[in-house]
Length: 185
Image (cartoon, rainbow, N blue to C red; front, side):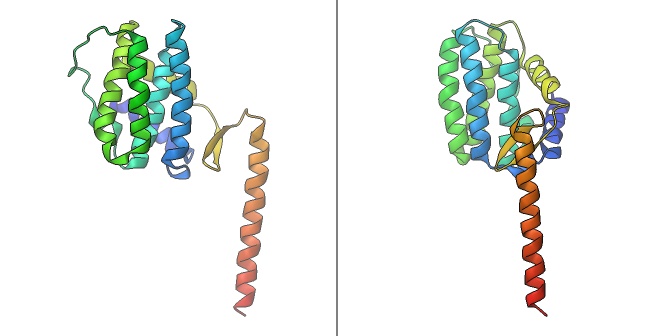
């Protein structure tokens, strides 16, 4: 699992997601992924990718908070009691909100989140590593860029607009530097 986490961290770093966005930006992504998880759990559908997607965003946010997610879980340390998945999703909603908005509690809350994600996976006949692997396999070749704190996929119609905006921003910054240098003369 640690190798998989390292790959996720490298993927996010290569796309400037960790440093190019803020935890609040990633919180928006986290809540989006949680919504997909809740929808699929509620409808009794396959939720492996959703569990993995939540884990990927948590991995990125953990790095933004200054710690590695790999230091905060032990999959053998909890009882695999089968609680209703809908109730687990309710618990998860509260814990994800705490994680996203209270950096000081993040380590403790992250442990609870990982346990809950593991239990949801277990209740569906999966394990957390399988879910994370599925999510990673889905994103590993995805290309895109960070713009205004949001990752825009290369396939997104907004991608070209973001590229154009970045180019305009670069030209403006260059012109500003040139004018500042001319004033020094």
